[in-house]
Length: 149
Image (cartoon, rainbow, N blue to C red; front, side):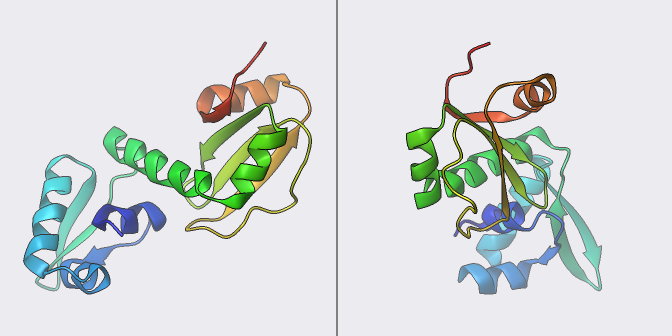
């Protein structure tokens, strides 16, 4: 797993360099280099605690949001649940809620629960597009299908 994926999976968690080095099986020097690069870009925030560097995500950073969308949508797309949904649905909208992901599915209901992945996935089914759903669509990321108004 990439170093940044730990921050994608747990966006509210803080990590020490040595902690990530152990998790990723990389040297602390290598991990430190990556973390400092992400920190310079504003993706991560770095602070010193107890003579150690502590890193956490900058949830407002656009590059972090893009990385998170990329990784989470990839997790979703690599599942059997997603494959089943794409066979019967017209559109699937991906919405990141930080502590979970919501999939707005337009079309017939084909599964009750999404399989377990790196983050909790909540499904919402709709037969048509209404005003509230349109608002969610405009603020989400389409990962499957075409939207017809």
